[in-house]
Length: 211
Ligand code: ITT
Image 1 (cartoon, rainbow, N blue to C red):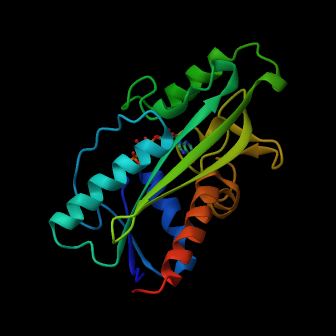
Image 2 (cartoon, rainbow, N blue to C red):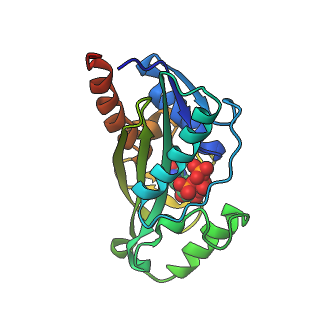
């Protein structure tokens, strides 16, 4: 199958920075939906990360198709979230909406830290989860998932990354994902892992002979 371009269905500025860097070695053109001139409002009403990722990529694939621009183009979307074990895996798929979509992460992060007040180190386990959903030029769909395990810290640390990164402490690195460089984060993150798995599936598709 001939694939020349990837359109990324996200409005999140942090994802728009990370995703093209992770996909760069495919040698394809990678653009955000905004760069592709697609403006759509998407209701994420799925009950899993995978469902929400597919909802987003289908809406944008339909919009591209409507504009007659889906040829050789893959649409991908990322649905991700932070699961804190002590809080029954909250905020999970509601991570962007937690305390309100427009509430600052300073406030969201402070709130989560205060909900873990007095909780010992070993019970502060958490993970970032990312599902990637893709619609291929012929309408076929693919999903992949990636995870990074860590712990919720006691205060915000670091200013790289976005969202919950300043409170997500990774024991192997001895710092939060907001203290990693973008390159380091992309090598080990939920998004990095999910996109590497998606890349492997895409490469297989690209090697398929047209009949
Ligand atoms: P799009 O749907 O437009 O992609 P969104 O921000 O609404 O943007 P999600 O529905 O996938 O995206 O919400 C994921 C939320 O989880 C995101 O807003 C962050 O708060 C958090 N999150 C996901 N990945 C993260 C990361 O790498 N670092 C920090 N926080 C992250």
